[in-house]
Image 1 (cartoon, one colour):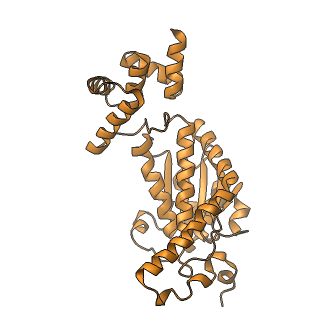
Image 2 (cartoon, one colour; image 1 turned 90 degrees about the vertical axis):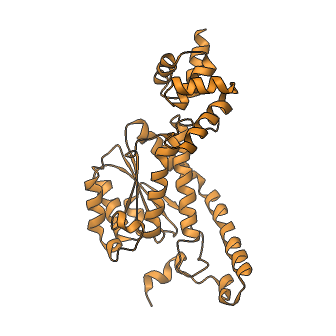
Image 3 (tube, one colour; image 1 turned 60 degrees about the vertical axis):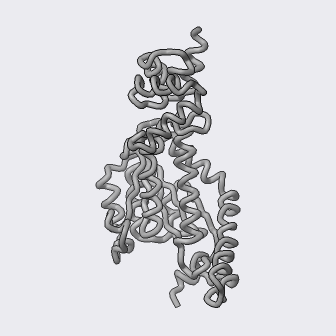
Length: 304
């Protein structure tokens, strides 16, 4: 028996699902759903660590740094998914949040055998992306011991980056390379070792929390509206205009005018309508207030 696997929580037998192969489809789904309920409870217990990680990311962003996720297999794909959704949702530059996966982007859609077992590949990917002391690197691995991820974390630390570990087991090798550990220990999987399930769900939730919190903290959200979205397709153009309306309650013709005069920049349009200024002044107010819509409007109101 492999001693490493025998000590991992994610590799233990789930007694509750031992007879799952004898169940109906509905019984299987109810059992999976029952197990998934534990994920949110687990994450609730580690919010202090997730909070600290988000604050480190905010600090990095404010200093011109970037966020990198590093993973293999499911963990790598989840990191790439979260990173790829930041530009359309929050109008970020694609370089601001990036996902690195063992085996490169081909591994997003198919398994690249052996790539995750190579520490030097992880270190090489860190060097290739010019990681430096302004950046944050989050290593993601359910087991907490994937060589590719460990190699990347070690090299990132040598280069002065903030290094965070995210895993689904306690006291893993990640700890020696991390300034902060997030251990989302969700217990044995429904199917032994299938960490794309509860472990992957926990990772996805945590990454959502990290980037959403960070984007709010750097001014990408007004009230609970994504005011920095990039209206890059027809659906997002409609959403952008709807956000302007929801933020201002302005008549449709005023929303259309502000959207047009702001060149489709939602923040600018909102400040135009709520502060009663032209597009150029709205842009200046946003620049003076680091892009925070609420602060820009208050700044103008205080001048009046």
